[in-house]
Image 1 (cartoon, chains in turn red, cyan):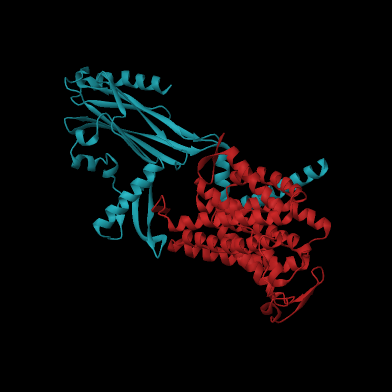
Image 2 (tube, chains in turn orange, green):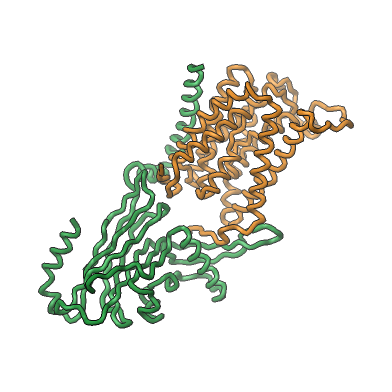
Length: 303
Length: 255
């Protein structure tokens, strides 16, 4: 069943897009990530123009995170103050991101930057998660020379101007979550990812937030920043394809529900292992894409 | 309907045509307007017509027909990737001021057999005779490389095509050619040119315009994205929020 995408300017298989949205939705429901890190590369492999893929994946992330935010809010698993600070950082990040995006587009290196960032970030996060999961599952012995863990990261603790975040039980400078939000906002614009899979480990390891609150807070940040980024993309690059986004959402929102149901049935450490492997596979595919001779040595830009 | 119109036209002009000493082409297209709708996966255009010879008698030797369908011309920048430090990155670029967004040529015999290089270049017959107007005073060798890259890229997308035996001529008078348009075709005014070639010379030529445009919902979306960016973005955000909320509400009630 083929359907024509008015902004991408080509026809795609509608069932394939709904299915893609569904699979990514399952992941986002299970792991509390937006799933953009999978949608964008897969759309690009399918042949959707990269800017349209990035912008439309952003729209899908918003939808996929809604139900997560709702359920975490009910459980009280959201630190609104912390989330608010990160959202402010994220909005600035997405604005700065758009400016840098345009500059890179003009020099023609945007594809390279997108590819390289994907490889670096996914390999790094995937590696960390894989190690954690293997340790937790007992396949690998945890390093015995464990330093006495400090509550906060040393750099974070040295920042001035401390605020009290009651829900998280933290007394840290708001500059740290602000910077974190800024980075996530920039990445949302660049890579069409919500940044959830960066925010979650960063909030745990850098800020020292309790795990109970991390996912909900990261989701609300992802929701706000991806919605804002959709707006920014519509106003500047004009590459949000509402039909493509709708197809992805159709599968995505349903998949997210099933994903959330699955979390209660599968061992969390096994899930972390699975996610780590998926992330590393995507990173590997992108790395191969950078080093291998591409199918298209030439590319066309309209003036 | 257009067939009827063509034959009427033919009849009306017949007395004039018979008196002329040059053959005349009467071309037509299966559709004057191609509408891109939600189910658009590309289209097949039939370019057909008749040759009216002076005196109504076709010459003893067969003539040839070349049909060219071309899309609107755009200025483009072509980038070339090179392997630098183990990574493929854009390293070089060249500008073309007048690259057609779509170009498909069909002929009754391979073009090199029909006309000499000069004539082919004048009428832009064949992919290698396109006037792309490269800009920037690059070396001819580099320009050729980029031109080849551009042709290859568009050929693989189905936007450039050559079909050396794609025109069928029956009884030396009627001709027909099928040209397919892929779904990622750009919108705009296309021109269909028909050339009648006799012993290496273009003896008659005719052009027709075709409109390719998005219609209905697709047109509405494309226009909204361009003219009302703010509202369009807002609609996209509301759509995603609404669908996410609806799914959550639906599943909660069910469980």
